[in-house]
Every structure is written in structure tokens, then in C-alpha cells.
Image 1 (tube, rainbow, N blue to C red):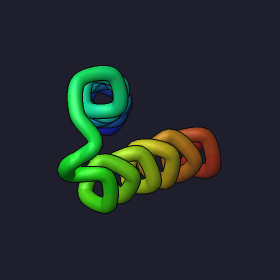
Image 2 (cartoon, rainbow, N blue to C red):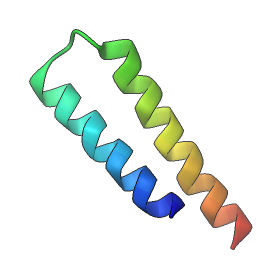
Image 3 (spheres, rainbow, N blue to C red):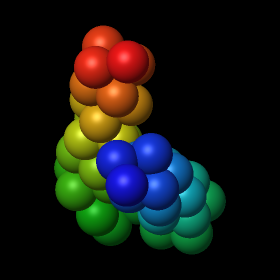
Image 4 (cartoon, helix red, strand yellow):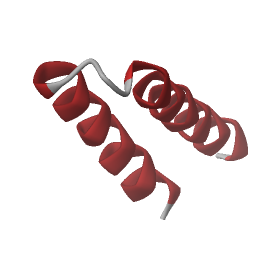
Length: 45
């Protein structure tokens, strides 16, 4: 579940990075959240 959400967030970040810079802050927050979710998953393993 967390892995799926993290992958979706990374894809949204990449799409936002390529398409538009208007929501730059929000896009980078999505990236940070995705990285945190991935780290939490690896720590819980």
C-alpha cells in the first residue's frame, strides 16, 4: 500500500516537474512525502 502511494507521488512529482513550475513548492512536498514513505517501508521490513 505505502509503496503504491509512494510510486504515485513520485510520478506526480515528475509530471509536475516536466509540465509546469507554478506549483513548485507543492510538487517538492510530494517528493519528500514519497521518499519518507519509502524509507518507512524499508525500516519496517
